[in-house]
Every structure is written in C-alpha cells, then in structure tokens.
Image 1 (cartoon, rainbow over the protein chains, first blue to last red):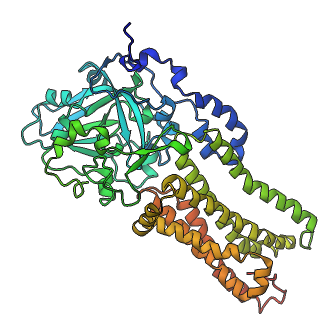
Image 2: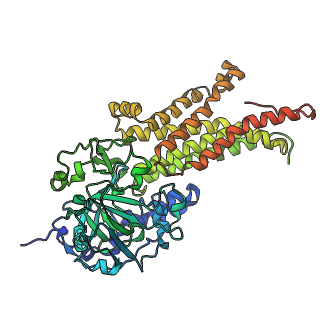
Image 3: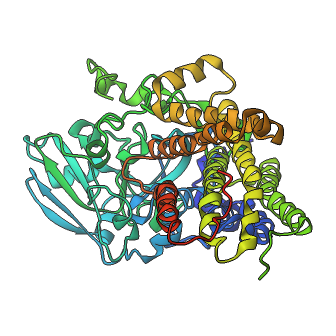
Length: 323
Length: 221
C-alpha cells in the first residue's frame, strides 16, 4: 500500500490554519490573561500575542527537491511572533505588533547596476515570474536560535538570469524599505538605514538562495519581510534581507548594515559555522524555537546542514578569517 | 499625615506586600516554565526576566536613601522606607543568583570549561559575573549582627559596592545587546540619576544647614 509521507504534501494543503496557529497560543491566552497585569505587558504580549499581522492570500506551490525532510517545521505562531526586524523595533515581539502599518501594495522592486536590462518589477509581476515552490529550510540566527520554516518562492537565480547581469557584476546588493512613516523602529535603533545586505554572485546564483514571497502556503506576513525577501539558508539570518525595494548588481563587495555596525561580530560571509564563535557567545549549539525550556539546545551544523550543496563555493577560502 | 515613623504594624503589613511583590514574578516564572509556556524562546525569556528583575531591584534598593532624604522633610513618616532597603537588596541578589543559574544551567550546561572559556573571552559575561560577585559580600553582611560587628561606618563603606555592582550590571546589559540597540537606556538613566543624587543631596543639605537650624533627618547610609 503506498503511503505518502507528510512532507510530500505542501503545508497549505494539509494543515488547517487553526491547527498550525499553535495549540499553545489558545491556552496561553487564557492562563496569562489574569497575570498579565502584574507581570508587565512586555512578557505577556509574547505569550498572549495579538492576532497576527498577515496577508493570508493563498499561494499555489509545487514541491521542491531542495526542501528539507524529516524536521518538524516551527509553528506559524512562533515564526510570526519571534522576529528580528529592526525596522519595526528591537524586541522580538515588536515586528508582530508594529508591522501592521506596512503597505505592501503597490510595491516595486527596482533592479539596477551592472545589468543589461535595468527594470522595475511590480510585486505581482515578480510573484508570477516563475512557479512558486515550497522550500522547507532550517533558519539559524546569529544569536544562536533556530527555526524550521516552510518558505514559498523560487530561486533568485531565475530573476538574475532574466535581468542579464554584465560580466562586471561580481556582487549583488539588497536594499530594504526604510520609510519612517511606516517603520517605527528606524528611529529607535541606531543603524545605518536603509538595511543593506549582499552576496557574492555565485552565492546569489546558488539554487538554494530563495526569492521568497510566502510561508506556510500563504503570502508573507509583514513581520517576516513582506512582500518579498531573500532567504539564504546556509548563512545567519541577518544575511536574508527583508521587504526588498532595490536589487543592485555591483562590481565591489557592497557595504552591509550589521558588518558596518560591528565588523568584528558580523562578517560579510556570515556562513553558519559552529567552529567560529561570535565574540559574545559560542556558535557550537543553538536554541530551537518552540522546544521546551530544558530541551532547547541542539548542535549547530556546518553551513547549517547545507554543506553538501554549498561547501564547494568556499574551497580555498579561510572561513575563520572570512567569517 | 502623621509626623512619626510608621508603626510596626504598618511595617509588617507593608513587608508582607513587598515580599509578595518580589516573589510573585518568580512563582509565575516557575509555573510557566513547568507548563512549557514561556513563549517561543523560553531560555531567552528566563534570561531577560531574571536579568531585568535583578537590575530593577538593585536600582530600587539604591533609590531608597535619596528618595527618603528628599521626601522625609515633607512627610516625616516616610523615614520608615529605610526598613525596606535590606529586603530589596537581598531580592536583587536572589534574582541575580537565578540569572546566574540560568547561564550555568541553560547556556553552559554545567560545563566548567565552557564557563571558564566564556569568562576569559567574553567581556559581557565577565561584567555580569563581576556584578554578581560584588553582591555576595553585601548579602553575607546583611544581618543586623554584621552591622554591629563591622560598625556603621565600615558597613556603609562596604555597602557602597552596591553602586559598583549596579554599574557592572548595566555595563553587562549594554555589552550583551547588539550595538545600535538602546533597550538598556532607561535603566541606565535611572541609575545615573541615583548616582548623581547622592553628592547633590549632600551638597544641598550642607549648604542649607548653617542657615536652617532644623535638625536633619538621621542618615543611615
């Protein structure tokens, strides 16, 4: 008798939303309601969050061989309420609270620089450029926590090929939206806005590098980088720029926001590497989001477990120096 | 408003309230930890909960003396607030110890070499440990017997370490967050005001003393 593994079927087809919205949220709401007033709204709002900010447009997806199998995805609730998105505030629960203001339509992504055909893409054109795939990826934050996320998108290389970069294009730079009227975090966090990230051309062309429009079978919630972001699963999360408005092909390594802020802590490469510690903490282990207090820690894998696919990009490169 | 210090009945009732206020969050934390209900990242939740609790209690205990000096001339019964300072200081030490235990258990996994490595190489951990270590002699000499044994002057001098501990704690907080993140700024400002209040209040009362023959409120440190 043929038995389909659960991961043969995209999440959007089998998991009713009220289930993946996490059992915990329902119970936490009741339990914390009474104590919230005493304990303070900061902690309480993590536990009994407001309704999630999301544009729940269903996306049709096809399966991908690049998708992870055998790991339980993190709950939708946690993926959408534990975010580093400093444009909406420095605390993990700020983006879920503040990102509702972000207007994701109309939205254009401008592609420019060393490219044969610079153009401006409307977000809905971009969304339909290639068939959308579901890609379940590990996500490892530089802060030593991790998730498993069922993203929706297509390989960035598809867009790059469409734009025909010139031979002089050695790197690609992503610039995020920085609009003070929609993003309260911009004035609270002293970073050099707009958020800038970048990849070497071969990294950007790697099929794992995902131009991402959704998660859990729906369009991206604002707090996860709507309407379009990149996901580079073998690098620390901050390399994966959110809410992108500009993609630039450049001939030199572009400046990147966290690297500029603290070059000793955040390298340009920032490949997940358990052997190179962050100055302030070890990167040997990570805390899996959603796991219980005493079983949160698990070992961190080289290149976040994607070594077979990406290690060849870095042959001959000293990964300790080029962290 | 009464012109006398609060009666013991009042003090006891208020102390019960302060104990409850300091212990309730810990009870809340334990209940939620047992129920696996501390949000997406329970380890970080416990860390920030105990860390912020430590700093708030420490700063609160440091606020007692200047606030008392400011308000007692207006409301003499306020002088009794001094009787809560030891409690708050000890609770700061209790929260600090929970914070340290969080690190030793959930971050270092009780591995000694991992801890030594961290202390030697990571300045934010060194600063945090310094803050806790400085509180140890203060907690040990918090008994009335110790005050008598050391003598008020020496005891007071020793307990100024509370300020150094608070400064180390704040530095630990700043070094722990990402550069560009300003969350520790509120507590830093409060501590700064308290540090500045001490010399300013002394100068002010010295200036007023010759012209004004009213006896000053007795100082206990």
